[in-house]
Length: 186
Image (cartoon, rainbow, N blue to C red; front, top):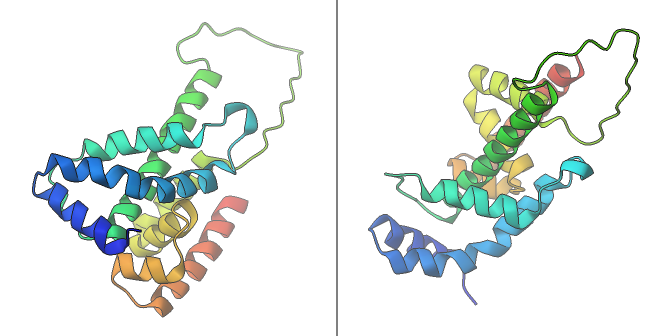
């Protein structure tokens, strides 16, 4: 059985340019990445739903493309992975919105025709806009939301990753939830 120290050691070896470390790292982090992906995708619309493996692969490929990242520990890696999964879903939602809005197609008038389409699931773009606005006011609560909501981190894991106390994470979480609720309900 491998522990958090093994992941941290492999991340540090990967930082040092060891290609075998990356190969050994992938199976160790896959289960946690899959859990994060499943949690995120639970709120997606069923007809446009990604598979967890697709989200993991896209996020992992983007993470591999990062240059000059000095992975500090397991928590740092998973926090970055949560943020990357969020960006992948936001990019996909923006692409869907562009296609939905015509994305270069000819405009056709539908005068006199009423079309009703109910969308279930979370509006990832509205959440992204609200989270971006929150982060502009105070970045740390935005990171707390990203890690707790998108990453599925516990309060303790979030505190460790951000280098703050558990009480600070709880305060930031409560503040962010209230701020986002107000922003998303208006």
